[in-house]
Length: 239
Image 1 (cartoon, rainbow, N blue to C red):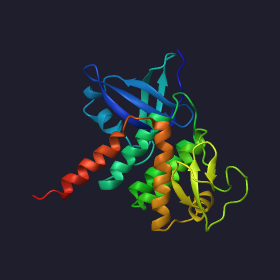
Image 2: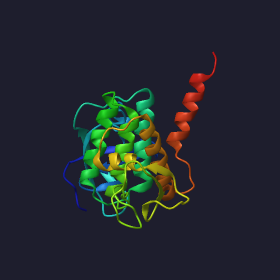
Image 3: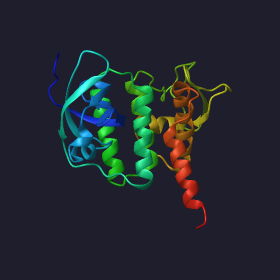
Image 4: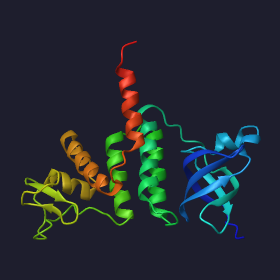
C-alpha cells in the first residue's frame, strides 16, 4: 500500500465516522481534493479534533489505493487561521465552491496557493467583496472555465470601457442584446487587469460571477449562503 510523504493541505469538510474517527475532505497541494478517514482522533485527548479543522494549515500523510484514503500522519504547518463573523461564512463559501467544482484527484498547486492566500486575507481583515471576486475568477480559470474579459465574443474586438455588454457563458461579452447579465466594459477590463473595483463595479462583478457560477453549480443551493442569510436575519431580529 503506497504511503505519501507529508504535503501541505487544508481540510474542506469533516464529519464523524464510526465511533472515534472522522471522514474528512482534504485539499492537498500536490494531490488535489480527496476523501480520507482519520481513525481514532476522538480518543486522543482532543488533539486530533482540534487540529483537523477547516482553515488550519496542515501537513498530512496518507495511504491507500482506493478513492477514500487513510490519514496516517498530520501536524500543524503554521498557526491556525482564525476566521470570525462574516469572514468565517466567506471561508465556508470558498470551501463549498471547492467541494462542488473541483474534481477529486486533480492536482491544483496554483489554486491551492491562491486558496491559502484568500484564507490569510479573510483572517487578516481584508475587504471581503474584492477578495471573493478574485478567488471566484481564479477558481474558474484554474478548472478550465475562465471568463473572457477583454474582447467582444462575436467580433473579437477589444472591449470599450464606456459600452455595456451582455455576458454569454460560452461566447463571452456580446454587444447585441442577450439573456446574460449586463456588465460595463470598464468593469470587465478592470477584472481582466486585476484592478481595484468601485462599489458599482463590484456590484456588477458580483452579479456576473454569481450567474456564471450558478451555471456550473446546478440547482442545488449553496449551504454557506443559506447559513450567512440565517445569521444575518438573527442579527437583525429584535431581542
